[in-house]
Image (cartoon, rainbow, N blue to C red):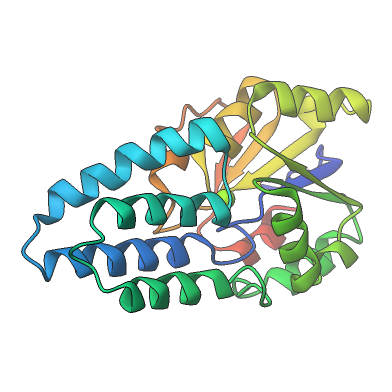
Length: 230
Ligand SMILES: [Mg+2]
């Protein structure tokens, strides 16, 4: 199947172009281990983390600073049981990742280079503006796309707004991403085409059941497979 009717392609960034959630998962696991090693119940701590994460994301949004705030809040609850040095090691290791070049998935640069000859390419990512922009620049993605959009949340209204602003028709616009909740379902709801690239470690707050629309949805397993589709 060749999607010859598509004119512009919008890419999600985190866990679509590069690894992202693994840093969060690793830091969370390391933190929980500090407490289970002192006899605390794993499920209980995980639940406390999940509840707090949900609340903080609602109130403050996404991004590594808000994630560190979650761990700091939990640290304060349990500080009599945790060695501060051990806690700081986890935070320091986690905080390194937004500053360095993102670990791009295999074939991302060559695939974008191929696609940009035929299509207008864009990035749409949610989170802290400076942090997301720094990752785009560090990865060199800005050189391969026409523009990038960084928003606090990726919901239907954002997709509608981008389409309207550029006078695109939704059915000629394709969203590519790993998140059913932020990339695929909202794009389909506003009439766009959507390509889902599953990622094994997709963040649970980014996951939900995909509601595919006939003729406007496709799944590929790896980024370079986009070359067969376009
Ligand atoms: Mg993503």
